[in-house]
Image (tube, rainbow, N blue to C red):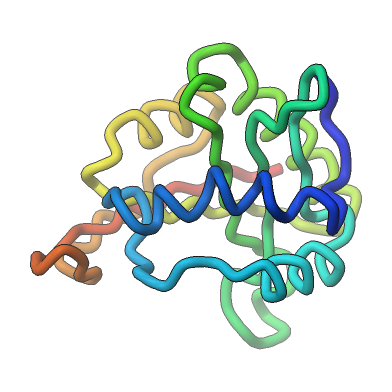
Length: 159
C-alpha cells in the first residue's frame, strides 16, 4: 500500500468512494454530492493536506484536513475527514492514512485534529478512539438528513 498526496487525476476515484456515502448513508450530514470541479479545486488548494491510499493502482481511501473554525485563534486546529472504500475497511488503511495525515498536519503547525462523526457511525467513533482520539462532545440533533435529526460526536487528538 502506498500513501501519497492526492492529485487532480484521483478525482474520479475519490468521487466513486465519497458520493455514495453522501447520497446513501448517515456517515456525513451533507446531502450535496461532490463535483469533479469542486473536488479538483479542493485537492489543488490543500496540497499535502489531502492524502490517498492506493494499492496496485486502486484507490483505497483518502484523508484530508482543513480549518476547524475561522479566525486566527483556531489557526492551529484542523478538522479532518478519513473515508475508505468498503473493501478497504479493517485492513489498516485508515490507520496508515491517519498516521501520515497527523505527521503532515503537525509539520504544518497543527496542534489538534478534530473529528466530527455522526453518532450513528459507531465504527468511526471506535476507530478514532483506537487511534488516540478522545470524545469531547456529543451534540444532540444538530444535523438533519433523511428526514430525521441526528447527533454529532466531536473527538479530538493533540498532535
